[in-house]
Amino acid sequence: MKIFLLNLALGASLMVSAQQKMPVYLDVTKPIEERVENALSLMTTEEKVALCHAQSKFSSKGVPRLGIPEVWTDDGPHGIREEVFWDEWDGAHWTNDSCTAFPALTCLAATFNPHLSLLYGKSIGEEARYRNKTVLLGPGVNIYRTPLNGRNF
Image (cartoon, rainbow, N blue to C red; front, side, top):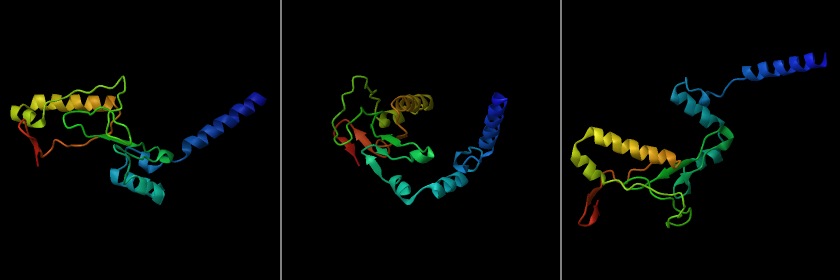
């Protein structure tokens, strides 16, 4: 009888928890605007402000309470840069850290080869994902590079 009552109580609690509403911001079937509005309505002012500025050179805070992850960016001009320390620009010199130096984007554009461009982007994306980068910044966009003097803005 005790086991029966225990199973009944467990089943009832599972049914109640299953019937609890999932927050709208987690429902991928809802429109993005509705999801964003819902997430913002659940955040404190401090959490909203924390999303608007950096916590280090290449990261911004998330909202762990709501399951919103930190954002990690990278600005390697020709691929993903090596890891750097939070408070300085020197490389972290991790033993498992390496990066691919891709050709300058000007060279890629000069090929007029969409297949090669797709492969270039896919390769950089895979390396970024492997290194847990969320956003790739675009320092090579709209910058003319020349072997004679680096960059011309």
